[in-house]
Length: 334
Ligand code: PMV
Image: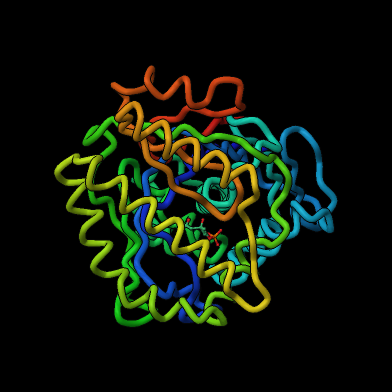
């Protein structure tokens, strides 16, 4: 038995969405994105392994390398090892602290935790400081994680995080714009469908440029990004909320008008959003929605309004999540 390196990396929900890439191979996004880190984590434990290939298990189940769920992490691990010159094979055990098959995208936390734990194990580093001494700053690790899943790079900070596209591939950066303590927002994730997405986000990104709306979207994003950041700075939900909704609906309109169309929202989603709009007007409820690449709805509101949101989600399956504090790394000695 060798030492076990343990990474716990949060997932995040984008307020300004990353959809579409300028350079696919280099994972260079077509626009900036901005997210709230969530208090939901993937924990990944990694040890050096004497076997001929990496071994990957998820939620206690060892997955064969050709299992759909194992392919992406294993391919990414090979990419990391080859590019950074690490030859050791790894024994990887991963699990989420949120229920499996609840339809919550876990690629950001999953690929983030894999990046951090693998690097920690290969370099025998038990902390971010130790990794930095070996040349892997948090920014460099986030930058590597984006090759696994673009949105994973934003999961390396707590609070509110912006991924700046920059003017060229090597100018992109990620940084925290406000810490987790800045604003006690909540994300109540209403699970309307737990089915796997019919189209992965990797394939979806490729279609963005086929949508006649995409260029128009890109033209307004800089201004929307500024306004979202300003509303966050002022902790003004009455300004932030409508921007979140406009942004989420626009991304889904781009998706819908792609060739072929990619439709992630179901009738249940539209029905729920109608109810939300009605209740919001009737009750003056300070609660707004955003959407990911899936049918589930993320309700964003201030912690103090939690009780008022309850009637809206009565009888529905949901996860109630706060702002996350960022990743953690540790090592258990043999
Ligand atoms: O990181 P990916 O390749 O799974 O893409 C994420 C896409 C969205 O979740 C829809 C938006 C975002 O910025 O997180």
